[in-house]
Length: 102
Image (cartoon, rainbow, N blue to C red; front, side, top):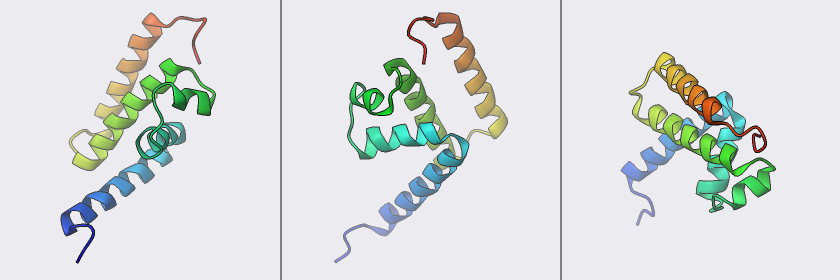
């Protein structure tokens, strides 16, 4: 009796490949995924472990999830990803609180 179906095994391989790709792109985003998803840390616990602000972890978590989704679905090109990343940064810069920025 198999513990994991063939389909689930393929999904795990895809996830592992996507995480490897994310780590190559941005190691901190990958670490946040590991802590939040695999480690089960909350939105309050992950920033404390990493020594960065809660806002930074929330932003990086959103970006990491988008990256992983793109890698798994292959629906967004790298140029589109960069445009999303630039737009996200511009929006956050416009609303940044200089006293809490990490």
